[in-house]
Amino acid sequence: MSNSRQYSSVVVDGIDRAPARSMLRAVGFEDEDFEKPQIGIAGSPSDLTPCNMHLGELSEHATAGANEAGGKAINFSTITVSDGISMGTPGMRYSLVSREVIADSIETTVAAEGMDGLVAIGGCDKNMPGCMIALARLNRPSVFVYGGTILPGFVSSDTKEENPLDIVSVFEAVGKHAKGELSDEGLKEVEKCAIPGPGSCSGMYTANSMASVIEAMGMSLPGSSAQLAVGKDKRGDCHNAGATVVELCKKGITSRDIMTRKAFENAVTVGMALGGSTNIVLHLLAIAHAAEVNLTIDDFEEIGNRVPVLCDVKPFGKYNVSHLIRIGGIRPLMKMLLDRGMIHGDCLTVTGRTIAEDLEGVESYPAYPDKQDIVRPWDNPIKPDTHLRILRGNLAPTGAVGKITGKEGLYFKGPAKVYENEEDALKGILRGDIVSGDVVVIRNEGPVGGPGMREMLSPTSAVAGRGLIKEVALITDGRFSGGSHGFDVGHITPEAACGGPIGIVQNGDLIEIDAVKNRMELLISKEDYDARMAAYTPPVAKEKRGVLAKYAKLVTSASEGAVTDKDLF
Ligand SMILES: CC(C)(O)[C@@H](O)C(=O)O
Ligand SMILES: [Mg+2]
Image 1 (tube, rainbow, N blue to C red):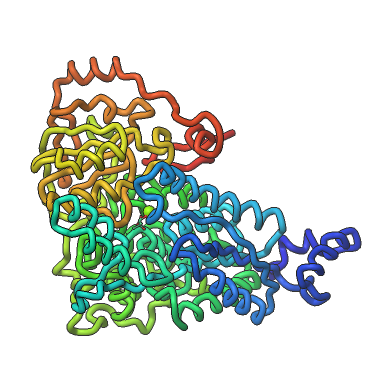
Image 2: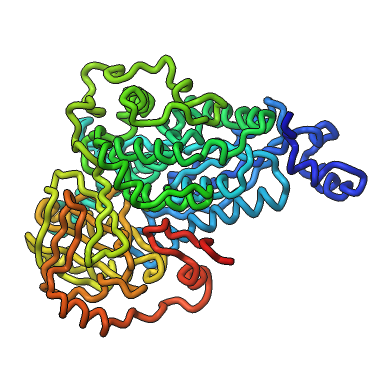
């Protein structure tokens, strides 16, 4: 019989713990509450972004669920920042840093106060991996809840439902405006209509991708990833999550019982089949590190060889996650993958059952409605193998991550146009400096160099908005938003700030990217390459104090998930 109060008993049991009980009585504990497992409800409610503006209410539902099931819920908050707002500014350097702050703050609160179990609720895209890193480190009974996806927006002059807007529409509208295809008024209308209310960005961008891989990993309740932010399904999900953690405490099932190597393989598989964000590579590596599971970029390559892209979702495809929800979410897709032997059915989930048991009763494809064309049948994929390419070569000796769906081809060769940072690149693209055939190189944007590995959504959207998406490649030691699409390669390692060869590229050098052979090469002679590498001095650290400096000092390579606690002692 497990001790459902393994941690809180140390804090509240016994004569000498009277001071702790006294403090807790002041926040609402009654006598009987000291006999119950304490369930932390980690939310990140915030007025600063639609992704998190409703999370306070969701915490209340999780609280009620935990209390009604016999636990004692304790609410607390962590932070969030918004990529959609910071994107393209110096503030975006804090985005990936916030993943660590969220993980550290949840770990700190739960461990300090001796909570027995945990519901973690996340909205904006770093919330998801931040929460999951904390759950993995803490290894206590826990459930993750996704805050849910936003509804699409529509401009008032366009009543056709096929043209739903979201944050990426606004980024791309900036590019169209620069090209002269959209007036000031047109841009303003898109700006005003794109984001209609609460919820995370609506395409298969990073938030929805991460929510899906977490469900596939078994760490959220079935269906949690494909729900709208508003409505009874999400409220029910929160309530059930609270109750589920109490059950997990009673059963003694902890996060690492669920977050096994096989569970990570399931997560990678589902993320790829959905056409998910490049950030799933970075975040899953980091979560696996926290769970002490051995997962490397080579695993992504190996799994990706057999996993097709099956979902026609934004940014590269037609549909939003709100459309996917209408046809049943990701569960029929998971059932199809299970029936094909692509995911492990014997992995435990937070329900206390296996994935296969959780999917019982879900019909495999074509369980989705007949007329839908969001999820493709197995034998008619969008791409027969993954769009998340792990590339290596003399430009990325320790790996890079490409997002190459095939829509813009699988091979690119062209002259480099080099920019020392994102702002310069954006200005160059908007000015019209980039022409068909160019490889845009944006460097000094890695985890150490940025610091913070910004997402290049403004440059990739400017390329798209200028109509160059099929004609230009963009490579960087930074990363991409889930909203980026095109012939894009990020996470180039080693990064320029750590002496990586992206630092020696010069304007006009020919670059070759082969997304079939998974190679990326700087086509200069071996002598030139060696001489330039010998002469290359990485730029000095930009930050000397504060969180960015601490981050730059500790962070590992993107190929290792950009974690801050590897091999410290
Ligand atoms: C702003 C976005 C689209 O949410 C982006 O940050 C992402 O990574 O998906
Ligand atoms: Mg993002």
